[in-house]
Length: 245
Image (cartoon, rainbow, N blue to C red; front, side, top):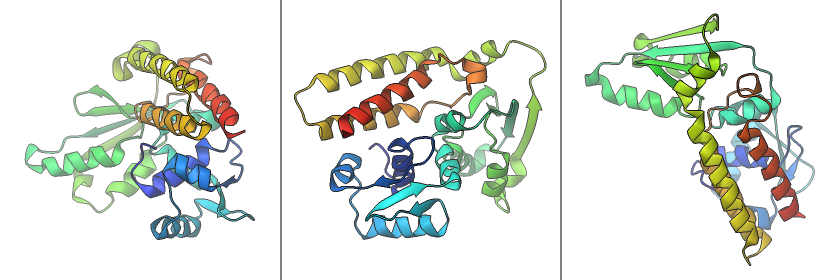
């Protein structure tokens, strides 16, 4: 599925196989193969922990689970594209600055890894920008850690300038648009192959998840209703429903 961490794989699968209402998903044997998620002891341990943390809920059927609102918020820290499919943007920008000395490179690299997926884009040297409400997540991430002393974070309204110019500079959305168009071609090729529905869906999900890792999840207010990423989500759901029927 393109996701190594089992916890993230479970939560992401529940969202992709459901919809914005978080309807329950039954992890059948076919789905387990498609998702590369066998229900072994490690998976069951992760499910129990997710239940305890109230990120998922157990359904009435065997191997049936549904995502909760808290679980959705957790997934959005890995795949920010999902957030503004469901929630409205509050119009605020989050600006994060961290200047960690070169001799503390391991701290800087660790911080970047942990914030990967928060929809952050490089604005200027040591300044990162995102429309996502991640300040509290950042606070919790670095609280009482050495890197806390090197970080500054702000929330601000956009007052002057052209946001489209800012977006293209920070995230280079033209490249992302190109990648989505390439994805559509791949999907078309996969659907044309003489292979099983199961195999097709496995490839479609894997390719989609791989691209979503690079999508900062900018809201419709900034990209417009016709942004190709929103089109891709609709097409994915159509393909998914056909291949699962």
